[in-house]
Image (tube, rainbow, N blue to C red; front, side, top):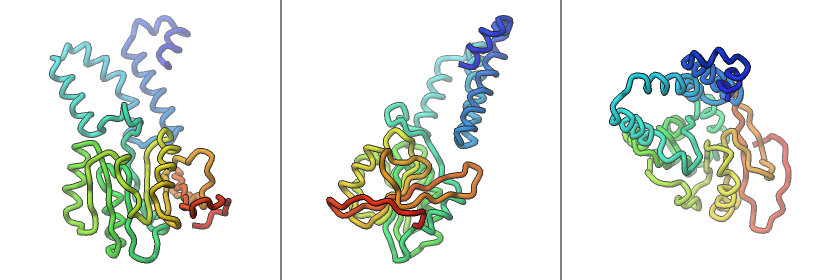
Length: 243
């Protein structure tokens, strides 16, 4: 989009496709920064266009492209189908999440746990509780599984989070995307027990008022949207920002 705009305004730029690719990458990186995307995602936006153009000029053999695609699939999985990119929870957000856990021993699920860093952080601080993560991307799952072997209260599963039953958990945490939130809330209401909590990092559930919105003092200005499962047929009420 940015390259097309600048190429239309300044036709001479079309003679310099690498420059146009750089403009496109810079524009995409700036936009993703303003949308508070992770820094690694901004970097991908910045270099993707120029790298693709340079790759074409180098006339790389087909297996290079296949290897690149395979690596992306192993790390990110089927994001084209799930429309959920790989987001990693930072330590400050993990500290805030710790304060939202029940004081008694609890059972916590991370839907789309990535490399399992959040679960390990929580497990260190709460050895009395059990933490489960599910991840569908193979390489990311293996990374999380290997790191979790040193934590007896962390359990990593590979699979689709839609297929995970939520009934056993006192807290379910998700850092996904805006796309699945409405449907995921319906699943949580069907399966989670009254009084348990569903916590979403950054992405609110449409048309549902959380019991709290916790602001994290990090670069992204992360928001944790805290929802509590009500009794069946109970009226949803609005509360202030007290967890």
